[in-house]
Structures are given as C-alpha cells and as structure tokens.
Image (cartoon, rainbow, N blue to C red; front, side, top):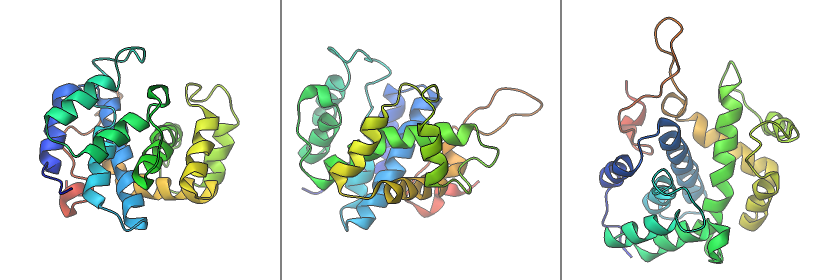
Amino acid sequence: MALMNSREEAWTLLCQWTESDSLRRHMLAVEAAMRAYAARFDADVELWGLTGLLHDLDYERYPDLADGHPRYALRELEAQGYPPELVRAVASHADFLGVARESPMEKALFAVDELSGFILACAYVRPEGLVGMTPKSVKKKMKAPSFAAAVSRDDLRQGAEELGVDFDEHVATVIAALAEHRDVLLPAPTPASGPLRPQRQPPLLGHPKANRG
C-alpha cells in the first residue's frame, strides 16, 4: 500500500500528542534505527521510518498499559489513514496485546525500540556521547542492573534473535544510525550551567536537511 502520509504530517501529529522532549527524542531515535534497517533489508524506508516515529504516539497521554498505550495510538493512526502494516507493527511492539510479530518491519521495531533508548542512556553518561561508542561498551552497561533498570536485558537480546541478526552487529547498527543524527538526539547544553535541553525544531531524519543548523 502506498504511503499517503508525509513525514511532516507525522511529525506534526507526534508533536500534538507528545510534549516531552525525552519521549520525542526516543521516537526520533527509533525512527533513525528503523530507517537504517529498512535500507539494509531493501524495504520501504519511509514506511519503516514513520512506523518508528509514531510507535509511542499515545504513551505520554495514556501510559497505563492495562487500558492505554498503544490502543489509543492504533485508533488515531487508523483514523489518520496510515497503512494497516504500520498500525499492526505498532500493535505488535506491545507484547501484552498478543499481536505476533511476523513481518521484518514488525520484528525490527521491537528489536530497535528498547535498544535505542538504552543506547541513548549510555550516551548521556559518556563525555563523547554517541561518538566512538561500541557494542562492547553497551554490553558492559547491560551488566549493571542499576543502569537503565527499566530496560529488560532479555528483550534487548530477544529483539536481535527475532530479527535474525547477531547481537553485536545489531547494537553496532543502531549505534551508527543514532550517531548519524546525534545533534538532534542528544540534548544541547544551554549557556552557563543550565539544564540540558534538546533542539526543538522538527528534525527530518533521513532527509538532506536533517542536520542543518
């Protein structure tokens, strides 16, 4: 099915539903990783990218997994005319909905979702951020139970297994995808010693102007 919704429209929808800078960065990170894997699998880069961008659309408004996320997102995405394969992929990334991951896109979304968040967490505590990060350094952090404790280490490895990719190779792929857009994904320091804040312009990952100042 042809993708009728533009990247700009998807970004506008995301901003309408999500005000949190950190959650926006997470969804942008997952978008970047999904675009990287779409290219690797010779798939529809735009479709995979928008699937990653919108996968947590309703999480800020409806974080309760019992009756909230991602159910409201699924209804909104259907109402907005997004293709069924995108909607199904969003559903399948939530194990508790019982939607089996069957397509490469569905498996990729699950595989990069938590890993993207974990890699960004690693970058936040490194002076170099994403630059020079290696799978070895990520796996070292995985062994520290108190670091990003909410991230299931089993899910990180399960995602790579379902996708059929060696874990180290998987981690390296996601690191590279995120590092390409590090100026967007990592908060920029404000003058003096103020808090770190992300860039607020709607970055267009996958487009030439994505990293323009």
